[in-house]
Image 1 (cartoon, one colour):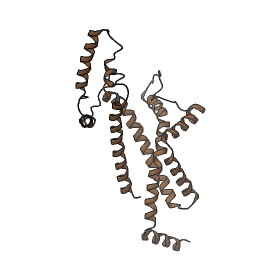
Image 2 (tube, one colour):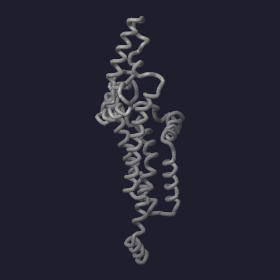
Image 3 (cartoon, rainbow, N blue to C red):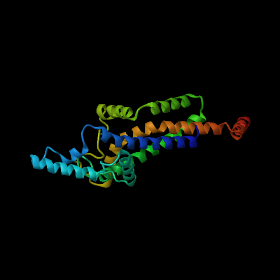
Image 4 (tube, rainbow, N blue to C red):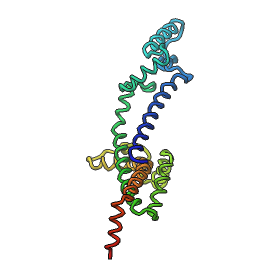
Amino acid sequence: MGTKEYVINRVVVCVSTIFIIILLNFVLFRVMPADPVDILLNPDVGPTGAGSALLRMEEREEMIKKFGLDKPLWTQFVIYLGDVFKGNFGESFSSYRKVTSMISERAVNTIVLMLSANILAILTAIGLGVMAAWKRGTKTDLTSLISALLFTSMPMFWVGGIIMLVFSVRLDWFPLFGTTTLGLEHPNMFAYLSDYLHHLFLPMITLALVSFGGLFLIMRSALLDIFSEDYILTARAIEKKIAP
């Protein structure tokens, strides 16, 4: 599989996965036994009696109309898709905060983690891919190929769990959670960055290990195609001929 085919395949897979997640998220709250409207109204709090029950029914009807739950399902799904693409994810049922604000609080750490892991995976894949293709059929090539296939086939949560068990639980070299040490006051920016990178290291390594396999296979395959070109074969033949 070439680079173009791989990119197209990944785009199709990503778009399909996002659509399925959106669809499941929409359907999930329609099939759950608990009614989200009743959760928002919280019937366990407040006065009881016939008057309060009637008031609660009126509030419930207003809530249903507010969220468009009285419309057909396909209309609700279209509205839901529009809100998703506009970035309107509503409010959290547990904290009553805007979901977008909760996401934005964690966006910076997520971007830093993904960028650092991808850069590490790309650099590792390029280095090992060049080495494996240049030494095709050797132990170096075989070891790199087996490692790439092994890490690609492993679930990310399993790799992360094993890494945490070894380096955090057994050896106690890295923390288990957080972005910085709780309660620790950093005297300067260097101390803060050092603590931040210390917490970032294991998640970054986990993502890089799982991601580099596919990139390595692409790099190795592309270089093997190049190394089989006529001008490369001619250059190698000339090199062997003039070598002392």
